[in-house]
Length: 502
Image (cartoon, rainbow, N blue to C red; front, side, top):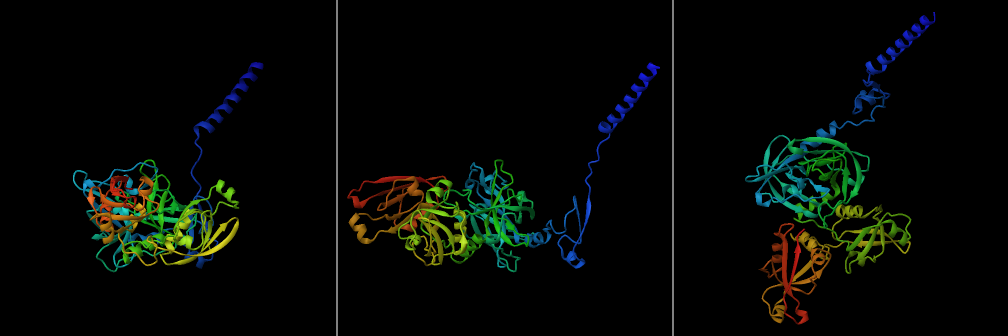
């Protein structure tokens, strides 16, 4: 009897074990997602007007309208974005610089034909019906010829209207009328968390649309070098080689930025892309078309963001605002009564969070001669001043000088020699370095104002325009040699100064 009971117990345990093994190991759990059909809680009329329609299929129940539909925005914007082909000679192609933040062109936007001519591709946006197109300067730099392909596959040869290296923007023109042009948003109304779409031609995949959100605003990533002007919109919309110069649009299909750079260690999209705000784009484009150069308002200060140490030393409640570390004599800020150590916290009623935001407002909204109110803090007390912007030459009228950006880069104000100066200083050629501001010459050389510059790269110069024309032709990364002397010292000793173009 005892043996029978033991045998029965073994049978029962074996059966239970077999059942458990079969359930947990042999039977696969059903991982098929449950799909709910979400019924609209809106009226039939409201549901019909919804971009998602009266019903929406999703992986989980959610109220109607929470998930966006980008179809209308994409359809509106795609015909306004063009494909750009830049054909250039092999000798004009520069090597890719290293770094985490790279312009799209820095990893060679789809270069091919390396044995003879080099061809790269990018994107552009039609700004008006008369054939004006904006793109990145690095997309068309060193171009021998530029071909524009419209959304309808029509091709045109483009001419360069103007460039603005500090913002990496350029304006092209094609001989066409009645084009479908973009519509414009306001980058001041773009906020972190907003949906945006990137429209362009990555890897020659024409009219590609990707979606993401605004991750941050006012990013200064130093992608274009020390003297670039940056206040980027950062997004996580996927962009790659060929997206350069393409559109960043909002959910209405309005342009809010021009895609210009990515953060990457591999040369491909890694989750971070950057666009020039449309307010800056519009200012640059309008000025290049009207004047050939950007009419840049100069405040005349050196400024920095406020860190925790400076916040505590200045007794500020927060790190919001911009610290003026230097106010240049005779410029707009000094004439308005601002001083070194002041903290700008507001411009015409807009609160200033940091340097990029202040740059975006001045670059996108004001020109030389424009006047606005600045709120600043001095010794813990808030005050206000009226500032009237000047141009780079300290005047208020528009500049038509094609070398204005180069002058800013170098930090120089040069003047021709008068007949009396030539006679007194016993020279037939040369120009006078009248002023030296913050720029390449001050940072890289020991040259001083008052120097009579005689040659540039061993070429004799007799006017400021010749001086700037020679330097403007020097590629980035190459050296420039200046030779001159200081007549005020009574010595005719020749001094040589070398600097590298950036």
